[in-house]
Image (cartoon, rainbow, N blue to C red; front, side, top):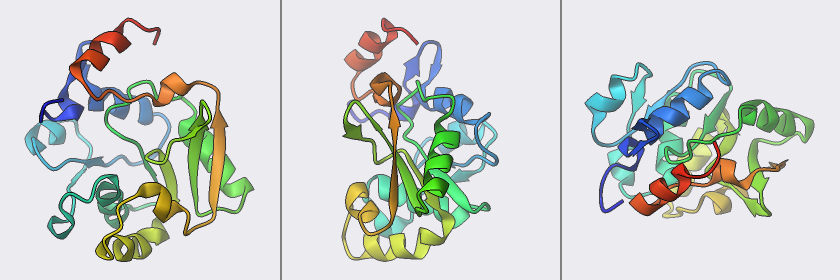
Amino acid sequence: MGGADKGLQPWRGQALALHVLQQLQPQVGPLLINANRHLAVYRAWGAPLVSDDADLAFAGPLAGMLAGLEACSTAYLLSVPCDTPRLPGDLAQRLGHGLLAQGARMAMPRAGGRLQPVFCLMEAGLRDDLRAFLQAGDRKVALWAERHRLAVVEFDDPLAFQNFNTPDDLQRQDRLSP
């Protein structure tokens, strides 16, 4: 997005991250927003705001997951990226069912034959392990997930997990069905 805050890019009349927040709201209990800039804008959406640990600058999605885990007041945290506004309406429920049915510590969707590791339901008790993983210099979500019992949950619609990386993606995706 040319350095622009991806979550604040407009799509169908509102910010991408606001679409995601609205998709998740009926699926989960308390919500958190992870943001590292434009904090006043995100704060105005009404959910508590958490930022990445300054010591883990540029650590990617795992730094946001850790910030969420450290603020998490529930037994589990569901992490999703800000640039996927077509989340399945049953994402949390299906990941939760898969996690419990398989006795796993985390669950991730697979759609179109691809694992979607940044969509992750995880036990809140994984926070210390994730902090140690990041402090060791590791950054890949899938590599961290391999260290734990993982439930993979199949989803039929790959478009539900498609992210928007460029302004062209926003325009192209606007023409596709919701």
